[in-house]
Length: 163
Image (cartoon, one colour):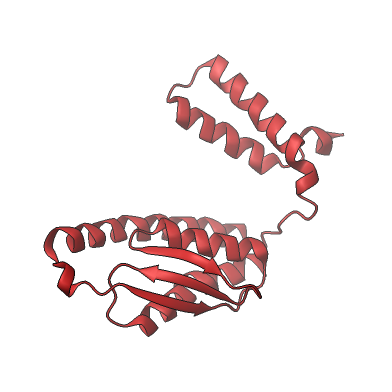
């Protein structure tokens, strides 16, 4: 019975949290409306979630989130320095193909989103066989180093979390 009311409890509380951040005011009415949305959206979308993703190590997932937040802050400073102090002639934009070892669709999605959220990089495409990501980098001198950093810094951690 409780599973029918809360089909995805983490999503319910995440939606409530996001709603309260969006309205920027914590009142009883906003909490109630956030809970209604947090209950209705997972209930409506439940048929689209046939297999719930399994997070094997939740503490590693929390550490991954903190790592990504740190990397976003650092990348913002790096991109600001590139834009403000580097000439276009000295900027080397590149396309990089990142081969994937991770196979979980959720992990691939989070990896692509992580790359896109980090300023200066953008995931442009996933290959048809889901074995490669095409990534655009704003300024890079060594594409192999960037590829290796994505694999070691993000993909390895996602494999520990999901597989």
